[in-house]
Image 1 (cartoon, rainbow, N blue to C red):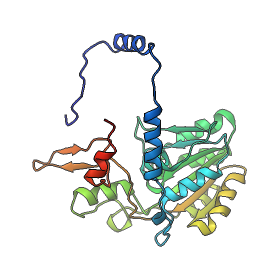
Image 2 (image 1 turned 90 degrees about the vertical axis):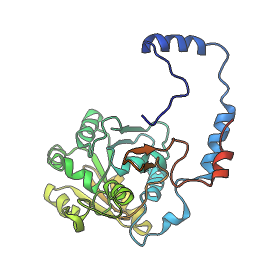
Image 3 (image 1 turned 45 degrees about the vertical axis):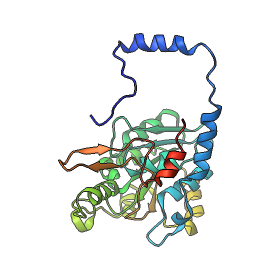
Length: 275
């Protein structure tokens, strides 16, 4: 209800798309200005910034993901659920030609281990699963199947001490009142190294850049399933992101996609508009 269309069309979807395609077959679309603007914004607003190199509370997941993308093979297959790892991966991972990235954005699942197993069984290639310590709990039993069939599933688990998205949402809208997001507020998770040992799965832990190269090399080179735990900050922000604000009557209104948090100064925001 808070989204107002610029152009409203009431028509059968197929008829509309057929007509639209016919119209688009005319003069070729000139995208030069648009592509130039995208490159300008990419350079002006990098996803991985210098402050993310601070590892006092773990390795920032944006920084980790950007570095990871530089080391992944050209034929790597990634499967992601839609916890906080989805936001980070979609923004910070530099995709190479030939890679496959399968994301459950339409289902919004917490944990997508069945998808990992399917991809691993389909072609016998290594499949990299990116998930969170909270989302992993939703599919934890699938580790038994992965171990039993020795599937080449490489799990990269962001350990942010609970449910980061829930923590951030409660912090934004509940005046700091937290519940069910960490051990301190009622949710505890088992030690991942012990979990891996229980299932007989190879375990790797990455806490920062000092053990990043060793850990990623072990992750890639090991034959068979791997659980790679990445210690990330428990209070890390997910930015840039679409922000919502609460009106006086309690309803939520989302900001437009081109005006994300953290908000730019208004003059800078206006200067970025394509007239």
